Amino acid sequence: MDSLAIRKFGSALLLYSVAILFTLIALVPLAWAFGTSLKTYGEVFARPYAFIPLELQWDNYAAIFRAVPFARYFVNTVLVSAFACLFTLITSAMSGYAFARLKFPGRETIFMLYLALLIIPPQVILIPNFIVMRELGLLDTLTALVLTRSFWPLGVFLLRQFFFGVPRELEEAAIMDGYGYARRFLFIILPLAKPALVTLFILTLLLVWNDFLYPLVFIQSDANRTLTLGLSILQGDLDVQWNLVMAAVVLAISPLVVIYLSLQRFFIEGIALSGTKG
Amino acid sequence: MTRQARIEFFAAILFLLPNFIGFAMFLIGPAIGSFFIALSEWRLLDEPTFVGLQNFRDLLGDSRFWTTLRNTAYFVFVRVPANTVISLLLAVFLNQKIKGRNVYRGIIFLPVVISIVAVAVMWRPLVESRGLLNYTLAAVGLSPIPWITSTRYAMPTIIMIAVWKDIGYFMVIFLAGLQAIPSMYYESARIDGASAVQQFRHITLPLVSPTTFFVVVVMMIFSFQIFDLTTVLTGGGPRNATNTLVMYIYQSGFQNFRMGYGSAIAFVLFLIVFSLTVVQKQLSSRWVHY
Image (cartoon, rainbow over all chains, first blue to last red; front, side, top):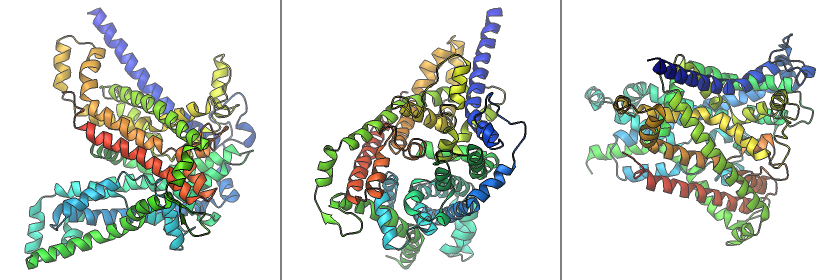
C-alpha cells in the first residue's frame, strides 16, 4: 500500500509543479511589465532586479498622457471596437436569422459561399482594401477601420447555429399575434440570442481591439492612431523610457483583461466553440 | 410562388442585405480584385498596366521573397509542433482533478486577450542584452544570449514569445476535445492496471486526434500570417532573419509602392492557406481513431 501512496504523491507533485510552473510563465512577463510601469527610468535595468520598486511612481501613468495623445489613442480604439462590434452583431444576427429560419431560393448555396469566405485572410486583401478606401476617400479615417472589420463570416455561422436551436413554437405564437418578420426578429429571437451575441462580441472585440496591420496601413495622422499603433511607435525610439511605455501597455491591455476576468466563461466557450466547429 | 413565399423571399433579402453589401465591398470584391492587381504593374500614383504573370516571374528570381518564405516556414514548422505539444500536455494536466485548476487555466489563458503588439512591447526589455532573461541566465552561471540581435537566435526568440502568447488558446481547444472523451474508458483502463502514461498513449492521444489535427492546421494557417510580432520586436531584422511573407506584402505595397508585386506575394500566401484548408477538409473526416 505504501508504494501506491508514494506513486499518488509523486503524480500529484508532478501535476501541481507543471500547473504552477506554467502559471508563473504566463504571469512573470505581465508582473514585470506592471512592476516596471511603477519604476523610475534609472531603476528599469538597475541591479539587483526588483519586480516591484521601493517607491511606486504612479505619476508614470499621468506622464504617458502628457508625452503622447494617449487619451486620443484610447478613445479611437474604443470607438472603432464599439462600432465594429455593433455592426458585426447586428448584420450577423440578421443574416443568421435568414439562413436559419427563412426559406428562399439558393439559401444553402449562398451560405456555403459565406463559409468559403472564412478562408480569406485579411492580410491577403490588404492591398485591394487599401485601394477601396482610397477610392472612397476614407484613408486616414476611423471609418475605414470600422468598415473593414465589421463583416465577418464567422458571426453569420455562429448565429445561424444558435437560431437552429430556438424552438419554432415561440415564433409561431408570435405569428398568431400578428407579428411580422421584423418584430419577431427584434422582440422574440434577438433577446434569446444573448449568449451567442456575447460570444460573438468577445471574439470580434479581441480581433478589433488588438488589430495592428490595418491601422498601420490606413492611418497616417497622430490624431487617428489606435492603441496598438501608439504602442508600436512609443517603443520605436532608441532610448525608450520603458517605465512610461509599460504604463502605456498596462493601460492599453487593462480593458480587455477586465472584460476577460468578468466574462471568462464566454471567452473560454467562444474559443472552444469557434475551435471545434470552425 | 405563393404570396406568402414571395413575402418571405423579400424579407430574406432585406435581412441578408446589410451583411451582403459589406462582404461584397470589403471581402469578395477585394479578393477578386487582388487577383487582377497581381497581374498588373501599379505604382499607385499612375494607372495600373496589365503585365500578365510578370510579377510571379519576378518573384521566382527574388532572393528576398525566398528569404521571407523560408523564414515564415521556419517559424511555422518549429512553432506549430512546440505549441501543440505544450498546449496538449498542459490541457491533459489541467483536466485532472487538482485544487484551483480554474485559476491555473484562467491565468494561462490571460496572454491570449492581450494584443500581439502589447506582447511584443512587453517582451522587448525582457530579451534585451541587460534584460530579465539574461539576468536570470547569469544568475545560474550561463552566458548571456543575444536574443533578438543575432540572426541565429532572433527567430527562435520570436517563436518562444508566440508560443507564450497562445499556449492558453490552444489549451482551451484541447480541453474541449478532452472533455468529449467518455470517462468510462479511463475507468476500465485503470481497473486493468494501466499507468497514466499508458492511458495517455492508448486512450487520450488517439481519441483527441481529431482536435490535434484541427489545432495543427489552424495554427499553421495563423502562423503563416505572422506580422505583428516580428514588425514590432525586430522589424524583420537582424539582416532579414525575421522578415516574413506578410511583412514583405506590406513592404512591397506600402514602402516600395508596388501594389501588383505585393498582391502577387499575397496570392502566394492565399494559395498556402487555401491548400491547408483543403487538406483539413479532406482529411478531417478520415482522421478519427476509434
